[in-house]
Amino acid sequence: MARLLESDKQAKAARQELAAANEQLRAQQKMTWADDLPTEVAYDWREQARNLIPDVRPGINVFGLEYDYEVRADIHGHPDLTANRLDGHFGVSVVGHYGGGSDWGTAGVGKVLEATVTGTAHIRVPLHYGFEWSIDAGGGLDAFTHGSGRVVIQDHNTGNVLGPDGIRWKGFWHWKDDDDVSGSGSDIVVASELECSVSVHAGQIFHVTFLAHVNNSQSGEYVFSHSYADGALRMWAPFFVVEL
Image 1 (cartoon, one colour):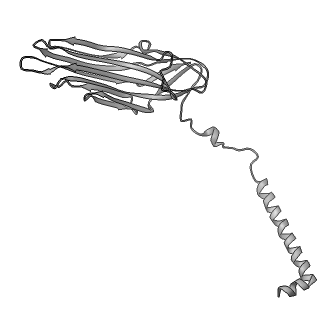
Image 2 (cartoon, helix red, strand yellow):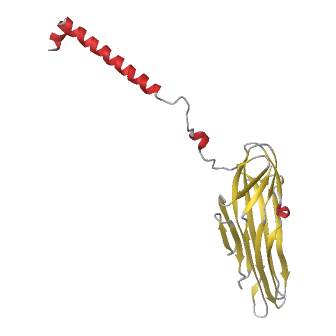
Image 3 (cartoon, helix red, strand yellow):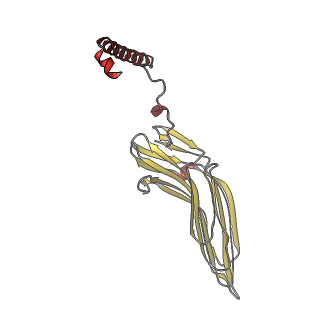
């Protein structure tokens, strides 16, 4: 049959005409589809996609909950560390023990930011705090306890503390004694007390971290003497301000 069709000139001409008609139809369909496309893109995902790293723009920038990460550093001993990036609460509690030795711990929350221009960024935070501490000592032995709040600004890539003033801290208690003593308090740290000022460049990513730190040292219990210390610090950072 194929050979018969090839020998038939009319059949060959008809086949060629049909192929040409099909090509023309496909071209028209392609042009119609292209003509129906919008000339302007109504939605550009690259522009509309959420910026996962908040920008720090010239002027006053306010950042609040939620935070991006939590810090729990069990430095030595057995401190109880708490941190909640969702509500901004964090703290450290250390209970003295008769075995002697030291207990150190740091906990906190932080946020990752990106500078949009080159300049000096001033970071201010009103930190709410509450604390209790005590020393129980006698027979010539003493104990030590300390608690403080800190703000640290670090470069994202290197981890280095930014200058000129990328770390500030405020002590809430610092006590060493060979007798029974205790203390407590609660208040809000004025934002200017922990203000950090750092140099940043456009496009630089940096971390802002708020920390609570407690460390105790005691000798333990002996036949005629003993010493141990307790300390607990709770903090809350509901928001902070970056002025660039």
